[in-house]
Amino acid sequence: PAVLDLIGLALCNERANVRQVASVALRACLLLLQPRDAGWQARWYEQLLGEARDAFDRGSAASTHGGLLVLLELAKYASAQFRLKAFDELCILALSLSLRGSREAAVVDALLQLL
Image (cartoon, rainbow, N blue to C red):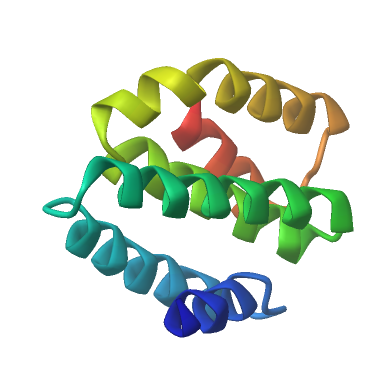
């Protein structure tokens, strides 16, 4: 839990390379979650999804990129059950971000990877 809070801070860092390294750390945490109880997994996946929403609401390019990195990691490494449950929301979030028209290269790249 505390490590996820620190990763969350790094995911919104102004430096893109810090955000990228934080997404790798998040991936490692998600891989550690895989053998855990499904209820326990769902709680952390929901928390991460909420943190991604919060990052988008901040509106800066750095926080938007960080939120997209969270969504990308969830899309790749969360349980299949969670991905199916969250698919509609992931699509809506990605579409709303694409309509904002960010020209930040890191944001555009992450958005294209997610789509």
